Length: 104
Image: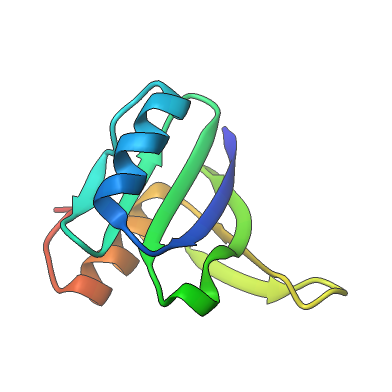
């Protein structure tokens, strides 16, 4: 199965979690306090990450794809980063960035 992925830079993670939980009708499946949250719903994979005010907005887009063999990214003709990954590859990346275990 493929789910559209969007990564958004926000200035306040906790406030954004409250807002997006209502908008998406679900709580985040991964929450790193003050830093990051990942929402995995039936239709979308959406992450939010704390950034400075000047870098808020879309960080990158792509696909969570069960058929992906790992994690890859490239840029489209407009310079926008597109990622393709499976669930485990995304969780491994989160574990690496924040040095926390997510997968076994």
